[in-house]
Length: 98
Image 1 (cartoon, helix red, strand yellow):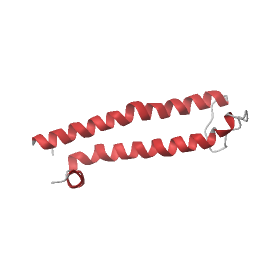
Image 2 (image 1 turned 120 degrees about the vertical axis):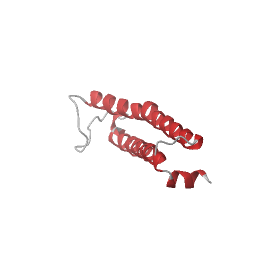
Image 3 (image 1 turned 90 degrees about the vertical axis):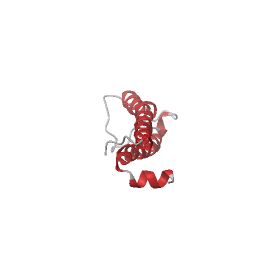
């Protein structure tokens, strides 16, 4: 059985896979939105768009959003991959909880 078919049919593998795909999508879209929002920082124009929730200063806002993206990129995505690998290992070994 192929891996793609296994991921589609085995219920115990779907939550970690959905989480991983969601986190990657959020990271990709979020990085692009932050790139657009903070594009004025290089030229010295620190006016942030109105749709972006802000802290007391533009610098604090930039640090907060960049830190959030780093948490997603370096902690949440690897953790979801570990969960997916653990679930797949349990499935392959035959001790799937479902």
